[in-house]
Image 1 (tube, rainbow, N blue to C red):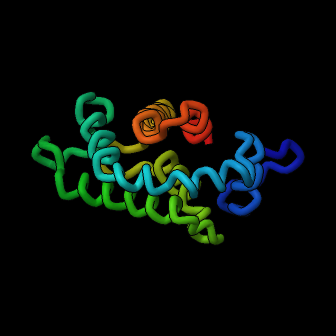
Image 2 (cartoon, rainbow, N blue to C red; image 1 turned 180 degrees about the vertical axis):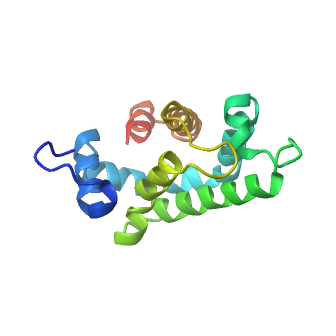
Length: 159
């Protein structure tokens, strides 16, 4: 984010994460709210991750990342990806923001956007942004259904 220094995010991931948090306005109150509402997200974790990957399979441009050599969905790979995403959500929601765990999302984002190998090749940025948008919308639905206070649901969705 710094215009003075153009250091690759992987060279100083801690700084990159701090700058990204500042850029999106994620502060201590947001993190506290995320931790308070984490049980609601974790309650729906399996449904959320399944819905996301099934959505990917609906579109050839994103399905290509999850197909086996025979052209059929690689269910084993998809289950591994769902497990990985669920594991991240469980750790994040339980407040495991220690150095290594907090840095996992940017590392995953960089690996998704900078790899040239594997099924489907390089993942285009619009798919990463779209996946985040789908996830945020799904979380908003969870908070709307689970929280009786509409303002708290909105704040949880925003955090």
